[in-house]
Image (cartoon, rainbow, N blue to C red):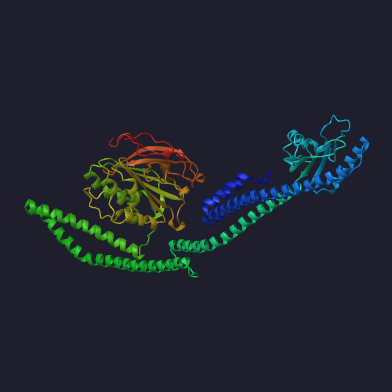
Length: 623
């Protein structure tokens, strides 16, 4: 079923949110936005001040023109009345009517209406009020009429009014365009004095003022846009070279030491470009010097290691000879021989590690891959460490499946990996047990080495594989390690296209997972395809996802996988638990779960095994 795609409608909020994000992200956009806003603000303020000034000037001008035009009409009307020879009421009314029409036609273009009526409406010769625009007669206020009626000096009175809009209700003040109402008294002896009013409209002037406002707004907008474009181009000319320098810096940081920038400016940007190139040249030179020093150092270590083999061998032979005859010596001499033998052993171990490291550095290390049952090198490594563990009273709990776990590995290197991890665990176990387990599927094998000792601080976990690094230099070490064991173990794992991951917590111990592909020729195995992995990337979270044991593919059917505990002291084998289940070859779900959890580290009784389906496990049980 095809579901039609919904078109996203325009959203002002989404546009505003995008604009805010762009302003926060880009210096160029932020600078342009601030410049445009400031330009608009200044232009608007200037326009408002200008409009107030223009409006006041225009109002003064049009008011003066209206007064002058009205004065001319008053003079014209008074002259007409003085020259008239009428006596009958009809003649008087006709004269006033003609006079109003003449004044309306001869008045200025903004004259709206002319209004004439008798001051004394009770006189028998009073005229009927005359108006050329009756709809605006209500704009002549009572105050203006009272002022004109009480005037005896023929003054001209002025009052601002608002002419109603055409679609509105006539006579409604406060709506429409501005105007003015003017009034005075005309002397007409036959009919008595007449009150003369005229209304002027300022519509044209208001339209002109509105047009000026629109023009100013358009100018403000165009000015802001122009300033924004100019500022954008200026800032772009500054930002783009900086972006080129930043991009070159990222390329340089990625390892391309030949990266340089073109010096095409003579201003401060040009100084930045030249400084970057000078920095890159200096950095390249320093790296070359460090590489040469590193090569010299590695060559020195290799040469010294090889040169020391002969004298150390001679010392070893002499020490062995003294060992054979130490019973003939007095106690102090016998102790001296024992100390000498121990230090020579340690010297030999250090020399062997240095030779191995020199082979790694020279690129001569190679794998001797053979199809091997992974349980065998683990058992060999456990046997080699058993003496040290017994001396320190550290129990070794080894849980291995009762079926073969075949993989193409270099047994010698895997033995060394497990031996180094076990020796490290025993050294820091604080008389608590050390556990060894296996998790496997069709793609990978994971060897787990877990102790419950002192643990490592969170910020130091990442250094455990550094050469000559020690977690606690103040501790007295019985095993006399060289400080290269874990570094060599990691290198052996990397040669197998695998890795070693570690988690540790103070007071809870340290946990290593050695992750090896079943066939290194196929390359590295993705984390999702590992049968067991740590549940968190945090270095102090001692939890895993997956299950220990052998996970067979579904194509092979249900395979019984039983995890057994091998006692390294006497070689006995105890069944810890069994699981009947199938597993996915990719995820490693199924197989033996967290079998053999122990409630007491020193007891010989193991709890029942459980099946794991990808749950988080904290193996080792409660202590």
